[in-house]
Every structure is written in structure tokens, then in C-alpha cells.
Image 1 (tube, rainbow, N blue to C red):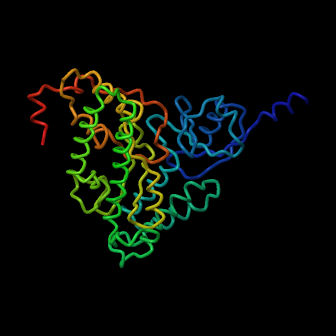
Image 2 (spheres, rainbow, N blue to C red):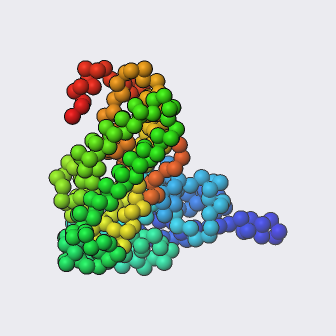
Length: 339
């Protein structure tokens, strides 16, 4: 009797579903093996190569992880070649329905919003619906006065403000570069200041790359669609964002403010790597021309920048270094890269 009571205490209950089904079932189990066995029987799946992950973010579950989960945590049972990227997978299904069978959208949204255990899903759907209803195409202050609330009168249209927003970020990188003069060896400080002046002049020529956020720019110059949608490019060490974060700061005031939390992240880190490398390059140049164009690209362009959602911005050390073969150039090449 006592042993049965002890066994029951170790039982935990989880809600489990599959990728292809939205039906959820409560399953009581003592460990991951038992969960898989019962889940496979319930959904009539082969038990040999199944995996279990969190519904919320797609984290694959181990026995230790399972023991630390709260009762009623929602899980997904995966078979061979199936993937799950978290609740955004359900949002993908909704968006696919929107484009393929618009009549299915209401029912799909109703099912997702009815789940009180998925607040993050609800937030995404509410944002999606708000963006559909907002005056995204409006550009001038007169057309969308609420969007400009809190902004100076000098901004007459959305694109001009978004351009300014991007310019401000790039200017802040230049400011950090200028402040680094204090740590430069006095013997080469004049050379360093001259280099900064060169970079500053080039930034003025390209208007501080404000075109990255301007939806009225040509496709190759902007980071958004013609409608103003931006997509997260993923953390510095991945090729794309698995969570498919996206936002349209042109849609409403709230989205405009929220977009300010997105980062233009330096893959090769600005403060830890690029600036110290530049300081050392000037110090050890011994008369060799520094490849200012290489450092310009690292500091101020999408050659080294990635637009990332705050959740994809990793603050740990990137452990990436400058390319030593590109720090200096011959005088012949230097003449070619001068404007």
C-alpha cells in the first residue's frame, strides 16, 4: 500500500498533442519513456523514434527536464522529420490559411484564442489583428495623427521619422568611436583623429545609412518590405531567425515604440573587438595605410550588422575577430578606395 502511494506521488500530468492535430490529451506519467509510450498509443504513432518538445518554444525534453516541469505543461509529440518551433508554428498555420483559404481564418483564430494556457499566442494574434486593422499605408501626419503622437512637428511623414531613427543609431556608433580617442596612445592620436574624420565624412556622404529603415527607398537599400514589415535576421551565430519575429513600425504608435527595442547587432562586436582592433591598427601601422573602408563596413553597414528582435540579441561574447589581412592596404589600393 505504501509503495503504491509513493509511486502515485511521482506521477505528473501533461497536456500533449501532435504537429498534425490540435486535439490535446492529458497524460499521467512517471518519466519520459512512459510519456512517449502513452502518447504514441493515444495518437496511434510508432514509438521507435518519437521526440517530445515544449509547445511554447520548441525546446526538446529530456528526463531531467521533464521532472522539473509543472503539471499541465503543454507538450508536442514529434515523429521522424517533424519539427516544432514553438507556438509560432500555430501562427504560421493561421497565416497560411489567410492566404489560401480566407474563410478558415476566423475558425483558426478562434481555436487559438480560446486556449487560456497560451498567453503568448494570444498576444501574437492580437498584434496581428491590430496590424490588419491599422492604417499601414498612411504616410503623412495628417493621414495618421495617432502614429505621430509624442514626436516633434518637424517629422511630416512616417518614412522621414524612421530614417531619422536609423540615423540616430548609426550616429551613436560614431559617438563611441570618437569617445575612444581617450584610450589612444598620444603618439598616434592625431593619426587616429584623422581616421575618424575620414569615417565621419563617409557617413555624411551616405547620410548615416538612414535608408535601412525607410520603406520608400529602393528594395536593395532598405531592410523592410515596401509596406514597412521588418523581419528578424536571427542571432549573430545563425543564418536566420527560427522564431520568425516580424514587426511593422509603420502600422501604429505602439509598434513604432516597440521597434526601438530591436537591435542593430554587430556580429564582430563593436566595443569588444572592432574598436580595440582599430586602436591597435593605428598604433602598429608604422606608416602603413589603414583600410578605413573595412572598418567603416564593420561599424556602420549591414556587412557586419544584423537587425534582431530583443529575444535574439545574445549578449554573451561573440568570439569573432577582425580579419588581420584586411586591416592594412597598399598605398596603391588606398588611392582606389578614396573618394
